[in-house]
Length: 342
Length: 79
Image 1 (tube, one colour):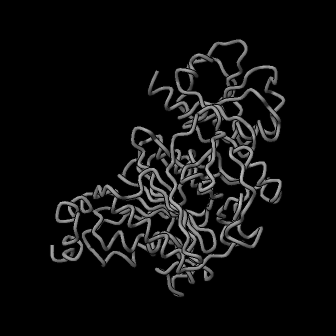
Image 2: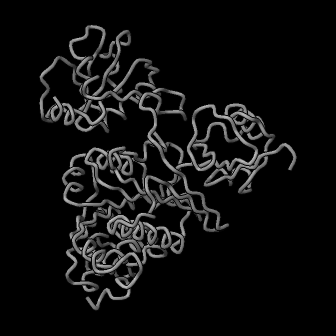
């Protein structure tokens, strides 16, 4: 393995670690400012299979920071161009490009084919979807995010504790600015994306000093860092920021709510979705929940559920924040969890 | 500084006050300290962030030592 000799001679590395990299399958979601540098290092170091998910088209304003793209690539899909640029670095690395966005329908399918997920996306909705699916599938997640000259890097091992992003920030924040408004510098994103690649390598090669259910904050202007140990939050008080209480029900608790006359169960999936449920409930799909709020009996305790627990959480926030519902909870893990445990 | 405690700021919080660290009057419990922070820096009150005390995210009303490392950590989403 002459190709990898400079890394295999590293202490705590060797051929054994290299073999782990060659056997690993990593899914990188987002091929932008974080994804470009991260992907370059992941391919170069010899990861066996790399998936790249990005439905976005290369724009001229991306080029100052998304360093795999050139002026000639403008208008092309990011995941396809990244594959094109990286395929000759280590030809044995299998690169799968997925030229579409990850969403609730494809997330489980995409993620379950890999061993590690790297979140290089740039919006909270997608980040929480990735987080929730990874937590559900016990899939290790390397999180990275940027704000101006600062960054956050976290490794959620998704071991027995399933510590995840929601244990730091329980619900998707509403205020954070995207890079269109906040600004972003390629050199900063390069460092953060490289750190995500580094933590991925540490995780796969089982280095004991990698981030371990920890989040690193870096201010790259002042060179100030802080490393936070994340612990499991109490499941019944999850929203300190808005003052509301979010209640996750596990399957056992959920079953206890079925056929209870004081409880209204609401399926927020679309009508065509399967599996159909085997208990009494009403169905109000999330997209039309607002218009149909009158169908919900405010006197009763409300229990929401969906496919995997992402939309029901969104519905719960809507009921609490906009309609001032007090007694509302949702089924964590969704109906898939219900049917797998029942 | 006598009877003051330092709080490190990250993300958009430091922009609000144009500095990466602030000093507030020391209080020996977390809830009192939080109240003191919002009294002195009301612009933080409706912002989204968590408190890290000695590298641990803190929600409960714990006792605080004057040497504690305190940081306000907002969520980032850029990529």
